[in-house]
Every structure is written in structure tokens, then in C-alpha cells.
Image (cartoon, rainbow over all chains, first blue to last red; front, side):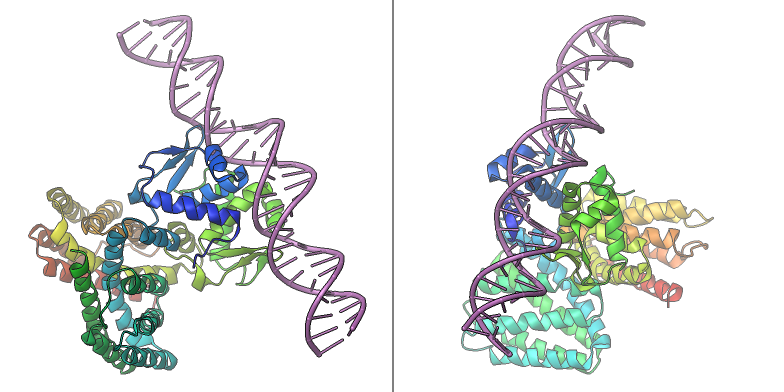
Length: 233
Length: 233
DNA sequence: GGGAACAAAAAGTCAGACTTATATGTCACA
DNA sequence: TGTGACATATAAGTCTGACTTTTTGTTCCC
């Protein structure tokens, strides 16, 4: 389910990008456009476009008479969805997953508070529906169905907050939740306490209780953090 | 102080990017690469590189036989530093400033709590130094000096949190704080209460009091939000 | 009216020549 | 020996023109 992939350019990017984010080239390494073009068997034009995109992600820097320099991780645009996907697919997936979960724990409670103030009637209904879907799939190893509703639930919260910056983190949350179900060990049914919290959160938003919504979300993300500590200490 | 600017490619990007984020072309509008190249008097190769970068920011989408379609704002990579800068320079600066301030109010308290647990001795010293610098410049219209130390202070907090996602928001916070001093009306000296809060926050981090650090930061960002309500209601 | 063949349009790709900036090495001079 | 000016090589940057591929919209036939 890659966003790029289309065209020669996208295929090269999907190989070179992950290599860089995986640390295959130590920071300061110099690549040459011509050599890369040769390696991937594409023309210089295509290779230049790839380098330009990597440069806009701050993964590399292109300088005359020097070449394409790989930048240290501290420079990377770590909020770029492609970079996030590449890093989650790579070796430092655990570290990345932790970073993102901590980010969630900061954002989502505030977003939920705002959602309680701003959510439309339709969004409230969606929320309730998602929560019910979670309940319905919380037993009997129906993990896929549970995940689907869980992701949808958090997306609605983030969107309903009315803050575009929060809304854009929907994909990140989806990635984190999906990762927990698919990549990490998750044989057992979801924690019943978490399910209850989601139902209560939908209630709180519907009743415009911002403080309670924030508190409940804090408990949810707190749980996600603890879960992470158990899985990857 | 533009990151790009270097080269023909950067100059075109710095014109076309802001135009799109300013909403000069309604979503769904179709641009043609050849026409754009003609308009900016550059070759198609350069124009293609520009389009590729805009595409990676999800501002546009390039499709065969159709052209370069402008995407709706909901699709934009609003965390991309360039996009942030372009939007802050444009007409919906107030809305953008509010979004970012809300984001700060979610992130910084959590970051401060983590900083209290993870900050090195050197970072604690830096923090105290910055706080003292703020105090020293808090009276007599020394706004530039105050801003400098304020920005540095928040950068240290975000970095000391140990979370890379938080650390990368240093530039955003710098932009918001700088905007308050330069663009918005800011004739008076900074609020003495805010200065005190920063001094206390440096203390709390030094004493490893995570809960107090978080609470103090929440008060600081709360102040920033109220300030925004006064300036742009 | 519906489906298949066709034509046009725009992006995608390539190859090659030329330009420009700049890191680095050379050499003369102090 | 150190230092500055100058020359040179290098790799990115730019331009041009030709060709390919995909997709859309039309037309024509059943």
C-alpha cells in the first residue's frame, strides 16, 4: 500500500529512501548522482528528481562539486509520512514506534478535549458506532475487525478536534495501531478495560464533557505506553 | 532566511509553493508542466523537479494525460517545514498560528515532563542560563534579546525530552514565538508572570520534578493561547 | 444505447551537450 | 615555512529535442 510506486521515479525512491533511513550510509557519506543513476539503471533526469525529493525530506543535501551528502538523522523531516513508513519498515522500528506512541500520548488527550467541544452530531454518531464495533469484535480473536474500528475511532477524534495539525496525525495513529496488531505479538483479545474506556470516551464527547474526554484519553494512551514497556523493555 | 533559494529550482519552488498554499489555485485546478516552465522561463527538467517536490509535500498530484492537479488543503503535509513557512507568510497566517499554538500546548507539557527525567547536567545549565537571559531582557523594550533566550529555552526543553519527534518541533516553536514578537503587536514588555514561570520550570527540571515541570509548562502554553485569543478573537 | 477501436494530449523517460560553482592542489612571494 | 592568488578538475545544474507510455475522450459500428 505504497503512496508512490507509480512510475520509475517512485520505484527508485522506494528503494533508496528506506536504505538511507535504515542507516545504510553513515551521515556525511557522499553519493554521486551519476553512479546512482547507473546503479538503478535510470536516466540522470529521473535520478535528479529522486534526489530533489530526498533533499526536501532533509535526508540528503546536494552540493555542487561535492555530491549528494547524507544528512544526520537529527535533520530528517521525521513527520513526513513517507519517512515514517520507511522507518517503521526498517530496523529501528521499535524506537520509532516508541517515539510515535509518546507523541500520541501528548496529542490525543488534547485532541479529545477539543473534540468534545467541536464535534458535529454526525461525528458523535460515528464515534459511538466505532465504539460499538470495538465491543462487538473484542472477543473471539476478531483482531482485524477490532483494529478497523479502533483506527476509525481515533481518526474521528483527531478530525473532530478541528485542528488540522491533529487531523493529519490520523495516518500515524493508524500505523501504530496496525503495527501492534500485525507486527508485535498480539495473540490475546484486546484488554477489556481499553474497550470500556473507548465506550466512555464516545459518551463523554457526546455529552460535551471536555475534561472527562481528556482524562479518559489520557488513560487510553497511558495504557498504550505501558503495553509498549511490556513488549519492548 | 530561506532554506532553498539555492539554484533555479529553489527559486521557482519559493514562488509556486507559497502561491498554492495561499490558495491561489482552487483544489482540483490543473496546471501543465510546459506552461509553468514557460511562465517561469525555465526548462522542463527544472519544472519537473519542482513538481516532484510539490508532489512529495502532497500539495499537488501529477497524472498522465491530465496534468498537475492541485490537492485540497486536507491532503497537504502540514508538518513540512517549508509548507509551514509558506503558510505563515501567507494570508491564513492567523489560522496557522492558532493551529501551531494549540499543537504547542499539547506537546510542550509532555516534553517538559520527559525533560525533567532525561535532561543532562549541561542541558539543565543551559536552561537556567536561558531563563536568566529572559529575566535580564524582560524590561526596557529589549524584545529581541528576550525572544532569543525564549526560543533557546524551549528548544532545550524539546531536545532534552529525548523524543526525536518533539525535538523536531523546535523550529515550529521558534517560528511561533518569533511571529508574536515581530508580526503581531508586541509593544509592551513581556508578561512578568511568564518570565517567572520559565525560571520555575528551569528549577523543576533541575530538581527532576516531572509533575511540576509539566504543570508549569501547561501554564505557560495556556498563557500563549489566551494571548492569541486577545490578539485574534 | 453500449461497447470497442482509435486518436490526441500530457506526463514520463532518455541521451547528450553545455554551464556554473567550488573544493583542492599548485606555485610564487613574503 | 606559511600564505595568498591562481589554475584546474569535478560533479551538480541546466537546456534541448526526440521518443514512449498512459489515459482520456471521441467516434463509429453493432
